[in-house]
Image: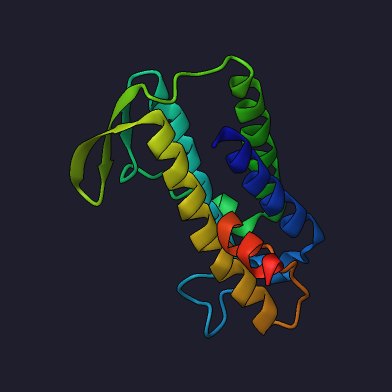
Length: 161
């Protein structure tokens, strides 16, 4: 699960590095409510909250920073993705206990979970927002890798056909 998160962060880095700044910042119709920068900022918020709550065992996904600089600065988003990827890579080497219990809040509801389950959540959440980013890019005429914004199991099933 950690490795899959690392891979998805790498996908984000790769896509953002190829992207023009104007495309990243675009909030014109029909993207005014969810341009690429906003989707990427939202993904990064979730990873930061997971990481920040890991030591205490309390992860509040509702307590997002909503850093507008990340929404408007593609290179800042790339730097944060690279830092997260490096941090997760180092953490993976410590062989963390993925069954360790954590308390999680999402949409105002608290529940018991585990570190591993929350890593799965981050994968699903990231794929969901990457799918929107891929759609926005395609609507703007950009070429996007077929695997971007697609769950690994879905992509493997498509390849097998």
